[in-house]
Structure formats: structure tokens, C-alpha cells
Image 1 (tube, rainbow, N blue to C red):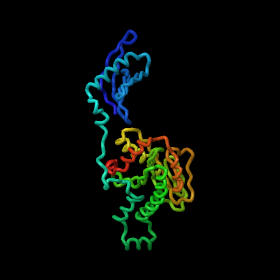
Image 2: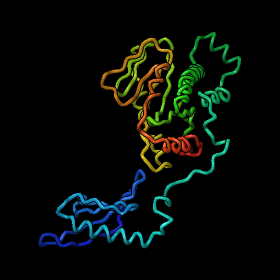
Image 3: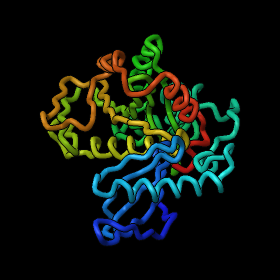
Image 4: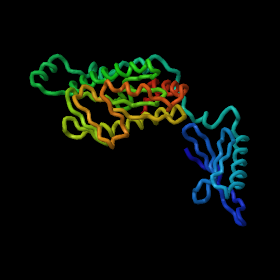
Length: 301
């Protein structure tokens, strides 16, 4: 967020005057005041919480210090010490109830619900089998089987300190298959079941048995960005989210060398994520998990 808090002050500089504009920037848990030249070039900034001032252009050293100190003083006088601007704007989720706790969801919960609500009756199943006609229900069943198999592998990572969530419901009746949260960051995991098929993964698309390209990779990246926006909205600090594609039951899996933006595994290979660390602190992991498991955090995602 960027908002103007000062129209600018004219300061004498090398025999002339320079007008410094002050803008406020709040994002990723930071709260700063920037001193900018009329053309928008930043020449210094101040941390609103600590009062520390950083001069970016030495020739404007005295101007930057004078202007930013004055604006910091003005903020201190107008904002009560126990209520910082960040605390006022950061959204807070209501207390977690059993109904809103997604940690209890088993793998494939959303697909299981679809089958229970809209699945075929006995007559429809018999007709489909007789005609050997593939149906949407078959796709749901295969997807359910795939999510359950990947869920088993992910749940094993709990012994390595990771939190795992399954079937995160989003708006418009879509969901995230799995979320993995730990010291190594957050991973948005999309499961694809292609039994006894060969899969090729490119930069933006996937081909199954050399068939028509499917936008799995592109959609996985979009999903990860969606997850990141939700988590950062409530956490107030950067939450890196990596997209992951997991293919279940395939006979061959090839990934092009230039495809580096999405992690790609077969179901038994997700254990490669276990040793990752250094992205989030233990405290941040618990904060991210508390947000991610809350159903209401995702209600408008």
C-alpha cells in the first residue's frame, strides 16, 4: 500500500532548492516513509516502527534527515503508542471453531462430497458400464483415488515437522488438493491421476500420451499465487508459496529442462520436500498454519 502523507518540502541544496515528496509504504509487515525527488526517485527512507533512517543518495543527506525526522515526529504525536497503523489495518479471523477447522479434512474430501451429492445411481452406473462410456463421475473417482494416495505420502511428512492440509475449499466450488506448510515454506499441491499413462511436462502445459496439451503447469502457478495472497493478507509478512504437480500411477514422467517454476513429482517422490528448511521461522510456520486451517480465510479466495 502506498499513500501520500506529505505534499513535499523545499530544501536548499547546492545553492538551489530541491522539493522532497514524502510517501508512506506498508506491505509484508513493513511500514516506511520514503523521501522522493519530484521525478519519483527515492533518496531515502525511514522505518516508522524503529525510527531508523536510511539515506540512499549522499548528496541529499541533510535534506533527507531533516524531512524524515520531522514526519516521524508528526506520526509519533498523532498515533497512540499502543495502536500502530499496521495493527489497525491487519484483518483478524474469528476464533477457530470445529466447523471451520480444515485440519480434520481427509484427502479428497471435496470429491467425496461431490460423489455423495451428485454421483450416479445404480441404473446410471449399469448403463455407463454396458456402454463403456466415460462419465464425469469416473473422473471424480480417479481424482479421489489420486488425492488419497498422495495424501498418504504427505501425511508421513508430519513426522518431519510439516503441517498438511487437504481439500481446501475456495469460492466458486473449487478447491486446493493439498497444502504443505513447514520451515521450507508453503507448497500448493495439485494431484493428477493418469493410470498407466506417459506424461510430459513443459513450461506451461502437460501432455498425456502425446495428447492434447493441458494447462496444468500454468494453473498450478496461478493457484500458488492465489494461496500466497490469502496467507499474506492475514499473516502480514511474506509467505512464499511454491506450486507442485504430483502425478499418480503414471508409467513415465518427463520434465523439460527449462521448466523450473513448478515442482513435479510422482506420488512416492514427495518425500523429497521433507528436508527443506530456511524459508520460514518456526513461529511463522505456526502462524501460517493457523490461517490456512481456518475455513473463513478462504471463503472469498
